[in-house]
Length: 127
Image (cartoon, rainbow, N blue to C red; front, side, top):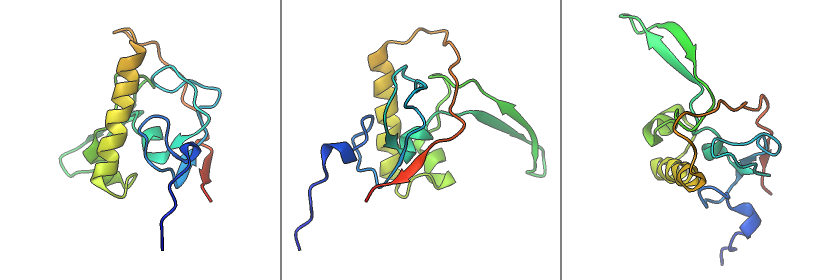
């Protein structure tokens, strides 16, 4: 059986991967690269890091620090894979590279202006 080639609208505008699940949370609020996207893949949506956890000696969470939503704080591909955001590590690597390339292309200033992260990611499934 021949496989169908995905339509361009089914590919993530940031990393170019097929979106079986996509997020619409950045339609009106800019992403970390300053652009608004009608939809993006679930992995790219989770590349920006919004909190850092500090652990005690027993391995319990001692403190959670909220980070500003900006291009300076990004998850690594390994962190996304370990958290279960990506099924394969290669998908996470491609998403992180895509987000970093979009940030580089946008030529953002060194001192980032904090952006607002949407509260609802607006997750939908592709048919």
